[in-house]
Image (cartoon, rainbow, N blue to C red):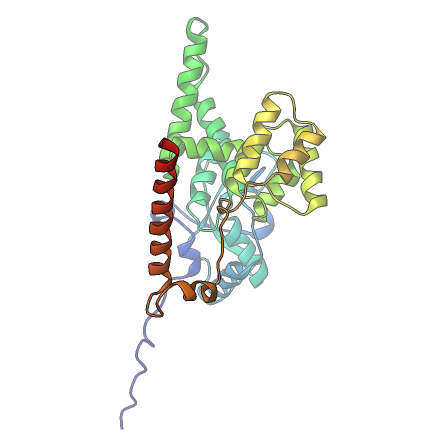
Length: 317
């Protein structure tokens, strides 16, 4: 007697590790020699803007690593002081730590600082659930790396060269990220927020668009604003944030101005016109029972129109 197979039992799903890597990484892994390195020789990228969270997605990656291993090697570069600096694969390393795995596959590659920054940003920005602040820091790091690569303009065309370099660099970051140039610039503006306001953006307690407007406030104004919304347990609308920005530009944003802007709210609906209500019971004595309310109102206005014309004729005589 043959045993029937369970439908789908032979299907093997790809490791979650492979889902968090790029096709370019996988192709490079196939072409280059991979080394198995101990975890304690792998060090995080300096000022790495992407958080490694021990969340539900990390737990899924841990389970995948336990079952399949690390299928896509990390990318790292040698450090002058010894060991290796991770360019791509911080989450994979963390998953191995939690899974109790002591070594993992790594592609070791020589890279200058700017190349490493650009590669680190590109591989991480392709992930899902990248926060606005993570993008803000990453885009700024990549923008500065691209500008350094472009070099400094000549003395005779310093301003023109600087403007061209800035425009080209922002365009490059935007194209690589699949964002508009203006959106990339708005993300980068979030770097001007003080850390407590950046934390509110991370927690989604301060929305992206108001946060961009608030980034134009001076640091001391931002601190005053942060203390106010903490004490009042409120958050600004986009309109309020724009008013705060305008007041800051005019050097009129003091404590009273801030409070007035934050407490003044536009009405949620337009004011209703004044109305006169007459109970239907009082009108039924003047109309046949068959007439409904709309017919009664129409008849009342006809009577009023006739009365108005009569008055006007009397005044003309």
